[in-house]
Length: 110
Length: 117
Image (cartoon, rainbow over all chains, first blue to last red; front, top):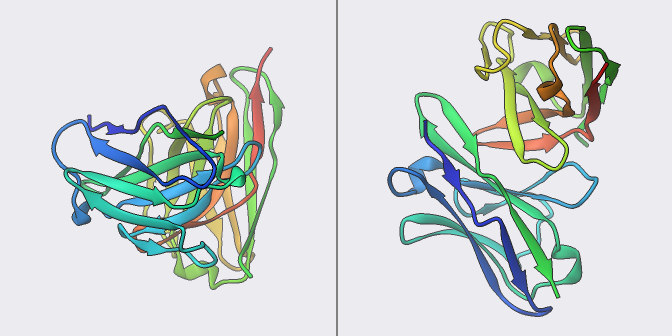
């Protein structure tokens, strides 16, 4: 069974730039895994940030960007703000019609 | 504006049943795959089930297959999840989620299901 991997936690200082990553337990991530990213603040429903690797969802500020870095999908946040403090989930297509979420990364801004 | 509003959650005993509903508006409901995604307390997101726009195809995560049934009524712009033989591990917030090409693009606010004696 394919596992989508994310670091459990990440910290950044206000105003800093950070990159969250999303990998596969077996193999490399590419655009054909159609990575998407979701932000969830405590007590709220997830919000779609990025889809098909690097397309921003409507209303998402351009501080958020998606890419492939090496063998992983990446979400970069520039100029981190306090309200970026959230859980971030990636979603990957792993073949045979299956889409799998990563376990999420808890971002702390301090 | 797309809106997805879930209802039907609550407290149920192990082995019991519950039916979740989702009222959709702001888009052509019958044209889109719809999903149920759940999140257990303090845990990550887990896709549960999906249904094609015309209801002709349905898929489930292994852990609920045979116990849960996803359905839709396009005339009422509504999505449903019938949950039977509920277990403690089914306790979660259940989200109704619209699918577009390669992503879940709109999420409801969720409805909480608690399974406890």
